[in-house]
Length: 475
Ligand code: SAM
Ligand code: SF4
Image (cartoon, rainbow, N blue to C red; front, side):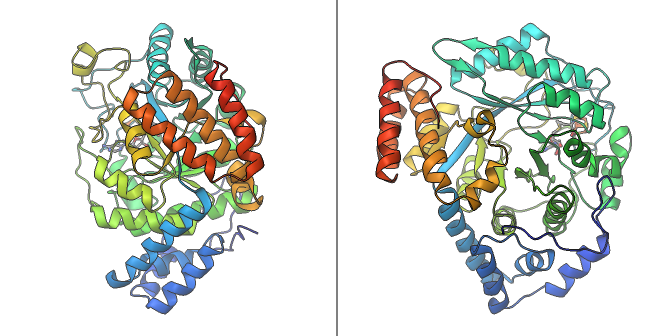
């Protein structure tokens, strides 16, 4: 048993609101300043890979400064034991920034005259995807503003276009996730049929008052419509969903509780929790309102460690919003997916830097990690990680793999490790610079040495086939 959804004050019913602010606030108040012994008890629970309850999460969130080290150390250990040293790599592709909402932190908001509006045409999407494939990417997340022009049919079309792009030598996008505004059940069915991987949407803040403050207009002003988006996605058959909160709008502890409460809701209503959780911090943009509750680096890393322990089966995503130093520390304590070589100006992957697209003012916010994918792969392998471009479970129909990694003994050694090695090998053979390739092949050897003999032999056999030109081999 990896989760036991709890009964909360508001019952968990599909399509109904479930956040009770008083419940979250009183738990946080009750558990503030928890003792080392209480924190250790909760850590023990998490180390048995049980999803934590709201009260247990509040204990970790309330731990005094001197006890935090234990939590971070436990998160690092859990991450090592469960995920090993794999880090999944992806890139965001902003498709269009037209938007009818007025989110006060976002440059795309409807009332921001400074933003140059742009929507990629089909041929521009192809050019962007070609450039991403030539950098070595296999997994993308397509991102859209909220606008009638970005209808479910349009989104589905952009997903299909992306899957259809091929480049030499073996370039193709094998998993397309989306981050788009909430749809109706019917709309979600339309995008599911295009073969999306994860549907990701961030609640931004789980606190109604803060939500109202930052979302003064447009469809997104409706807190409940957004809160129940993933319920409709699930009803439409998308059982691979990503949660998120935009840190800085309200107290970060409240948001972590909100994410765990949302997790409980999905487990209770649909028998499946989130595939991923994101926790972007607000970054510089042409915002109309400042961040009311900015989160410092220390609290940010701690929030990640708490989430790692609270929902051990979910992938944790950290993006290039964060500078390289913060990302490197965050990876240690729980992050499992990062983006690489990210560009946010719409249409800028295919353009050379400094050209028109970079100056257009069409991006949503400033990124702080501008390293290329090659540099990221180099850094990860130098630090002992195993970069992975794996998309095997999704394509083999092993949906719910984030649960299998926990519940099926040996799953990681049989599938995830070998597939990480094979996809990294493709990257090294086709796209890496000579220095990164040398380092990467050493990482491949280290990873092979950690596999059981039979899995290592089967992986070596496939590696030989990759060296002789075959592509897309997976278990
Ligand atoms: N328009 C859709 C929506 O709002 O859900 C999806 C795309 S939106 C471009 C993706 C996410 O970017 C938002 O959910 C928000 O959390 C994040 N975001 C917006 N402005 C930001 C900022 N200034 N800094 C960091 N993240 C930001
Ligand atoms: Fe539009 Fe999304 Fe930006 Fe809000 S966060 S203004 S909905 S693009």
